[in-house]
Length: 484
Image 1 (cartoon, rainbow, N blue to C red):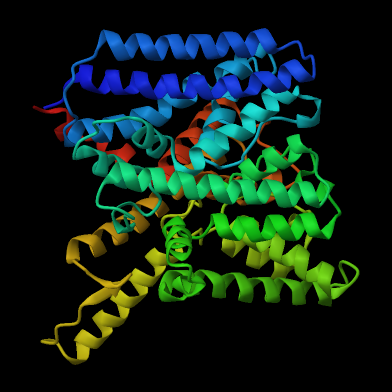
Image 2 (cartoon, rainbow, N blue to C red; image 1 turned 180 degrees about the horizontal axis):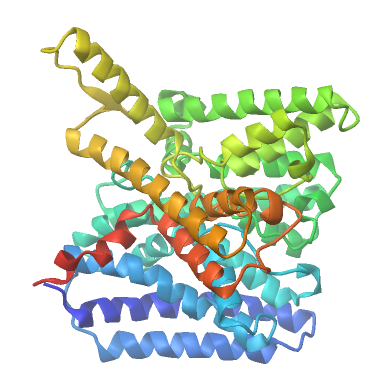
């Protein structure tokens, strides 16, 4: 049974949390004496007031059931994006709701696709909110909600699994889901502080260091510069961002366990992490060799840095750009294109299909081949130190099938709206995979501002579907879901 009051009350608390986060933009607006201070304050006030009003008008004191937890996850991200768009709307810098909603969804889902043509002309307070949405969405706004809210009950586990990248395959740090969410957020914050400090040491100012850290650890990709990280020619800054993008694309449970056990070899126990690292190294070397053969960039360090930066950026779904890879030689560009269908690890801030799912499907394929030779053999599929049941394997295969279906739908609609097939394919892949830039008309030096409003709403849906990994959104459209 679905009780609307329970859902609305919890949505109210989530909205209030978003409104409180908006207040962190005010100091920057005040320090730089910007004219949008009132707009940010009004947006925060409307958001907090709306959230608290819903929280207390519909308070029931009852725990959520299974159906209500799915509704909170699906509706929570949509409602958060609507209220998160208010600073853009009230300030007048994105007066179109389609643009403001697209930019906010792109932020919260850590996609990094943008409709902003000249971000350097934006006020600091607005730029800070734009980057902060990515940092909040990186570890998950529902995970933040669980970490802050008390008395979630047993359904807190369902909320967490529905939002965290990797869904039911992901691991918990603690049997208590609130404690798991808190420890993951603490790990996230500590690593973020380390990234900020290094960027400061290597020459970024505090504002840019914070904004780029938000976008790096969340694997989001919003920058405060029109030319993205390509603005910074300092190799130390670029290598720092490469390393922390790689960290952001790694399962955060591994980061926590490595710290807890004081043992970096924890990472080597994960088959997914080993595949993830191997893909990064191999793809970076192939791209660097291609750049070398084409005579691009000065020395091999610069070639390897440019190749590694774009491989890690696209594979982890960050979407930063240090160069226009759309103009790279075919082999290097082909490697980048393939990285658009890989993703970060399960339990990371990265989106996309993920190496763990590829491993599961590969091992399942090997088992099926062995069964052709030994039909009666019992061959369990192991992943992450445990045996996966048939239901889990089916979930992975269904996800892959639905992912391709949504990708095809996106390509078809964007083509109907006038985009060429190449740009339609990479735009749909970049938004569904939460990557940001693609190729062609949506390449690293372009943006999404030219796409019609219908296309922006479609891509916003793809971003949400990709971030929540399809099922939590899709289940809301089943008639059986709403039946008593």
